Image 1 (cartoon, helix red, strand yellow):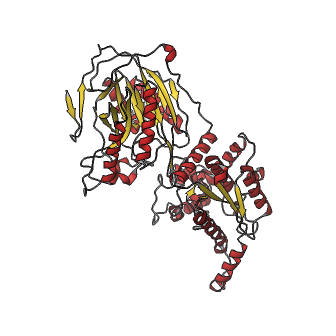
Image 2: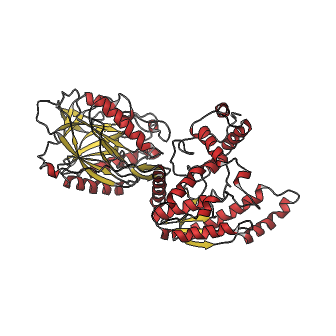
Image 3: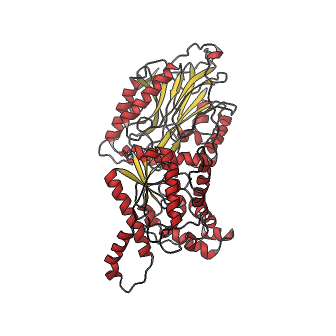
Length: 596
């Protein structure tokens, strides 16, 4: 029989699955793990069409693409623009004209329209976060995401309606296939289990799942639980690439019904793989089935594709790769080709320069040494050695003349007042002005170098070391910065970050003999407190109860809370934790609540 979408826009041919029908024991799936760009409908269309052609040529029954692949993820308030949603519809229809082979495509898109002038929060007619099923030059069905995440970096309930339960299966390659989207697979006893009980032989799950440390382990543990509940294999296809603060790490997985990983794609890079997924014996279907494509006769076993199972990387390597990918895509997707970094000879500027060289190539990275009257000889030599090791351009612009001139200008106003942080911060602001001038003149993006430990407690200067386009290590605690540097020095090519950078006491060098530990507790203590208070939302009483000094706890918590206004004015940073400043942790600047 024929059924129509609730909005009346499309008609689908549906029937009931007959378990007596002959069906193949495998379905050939092409995993299309792509790096897409939010709002780049033309560019995304080109990527999708090329990947589909490759999948069809490989003899795949089904090509699977990421969540919201047509428009990129997350589109955020672009979804409130009716014209944007209409453009996504048009782009999907254009993609469908390229899907003319045996292979079926499952691609993420925005389904539904908003009436012009309607309240965007009413959701009278969608939109839905959906997965289109495309075959024969047309859209033959669309699954609407049921579970909408509304925590951490996600706020999908702001934009989307939930899809209904009991949506049809799709007969693809002669098999009843269930389509789901991202969060659906994370729900215990949810849409995946419902689909399996309804007769699905395999579940497809398309994703835009962002990276944080240990995320891949969590995903595969979850998938193991889900195949255990459902008894059917799951194809988990993830997006890859950087989008503002977020990094999508790929790592797409095909998990068999017994929990074995049949295929795992590489992380942090685009990837394409064809997998034959074995299914179990037929069961009666309770859900209606949309007829899409019939089975094809496979060749001999010798022609079966051999799936890749990429091994997991070490923790430092996956963090490094996430930062490098986030840096590369933020710079290039925003129209920049080169970057500039202020080199102080310290560990933070060293790691940012190294990441930039790895991500963009040494010829696109510029280092600037800006010594003051307080800069030590070893800081200059360490910065020079780093630049030479990396093979990046370096130049020196001494700030003493500007510092003296500004001090002379301010002297009448400062008369009778003792020197304090004002004079120290003036040096940082001069450096910020110089870097921004180079950015304006040369077209280089400024990369700032503040880490999570400093950002948390406000150990930074507004319009000084916070001035720039991207805060590369904003979510990386100081101790992890050191660990990443040591790891990078073990890679092919030998030591690139001078050993002296990793052994000397950290210092901003804004006054004579300055060290970080004169203003802050040791990072071994500070990082633990920040993780507990920021990442884990522990209370002061809980921190004191586990043995932290009460006066220190109150001081650090106070610094964290009062620094919110600085963080809000700082550039975005790449997220690697489950609680990054910005998208994850949203604390009001004007805030009278004090937990101490």
